[in-house]
Length: 111
Length: 117
Image (cartoon, rainbow over all chains, first blue to last red):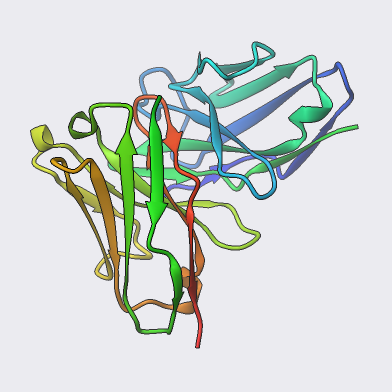
């Protein structure tokens, strides 16, 4: 069973930039690895909301300050110009031949 | 607009059974793979099961933690997804989300299942 690892917590200043990463135990996440990285935002008491799909694609509701990429063999979510409303739990997921595996989540504090 | 609405959650005793439903709208349901994802209280997300579409013979996959106890099914004529859960354990207590994870990642609001005596 693959394990997906995220930073447990990060803090960013309002207006600042922060990068969250998503690491696979089975090897590097690349454009050819078939992992289809997704990024989800979840606030307390709410369902998850997809911010980024297939590495870098935004939804219509995804603020432009969020971007997805591959960075050093990991999937990455970069927030540029953090807002207080961005304080939330962020999860990534990677696909492994029939199963999605979620990371443990990153609690992002905007302070 | 894609909408996924779960129902069927509730309180069930250990060893019992429960069937969750998900009503889909706003997209051609029959074209897509569908998933169930759960979240135990205060914990992270856990993928539970997937059912593929007719083109892929409605094949299914399950997380190891539920394999042999849970069964995912669908009714394309009714745009509905189901999760039949049996031999429930206290550790199955969670909010269960219906989701279309491939092709954009869409989520329902979830339904709470509590397994307790």
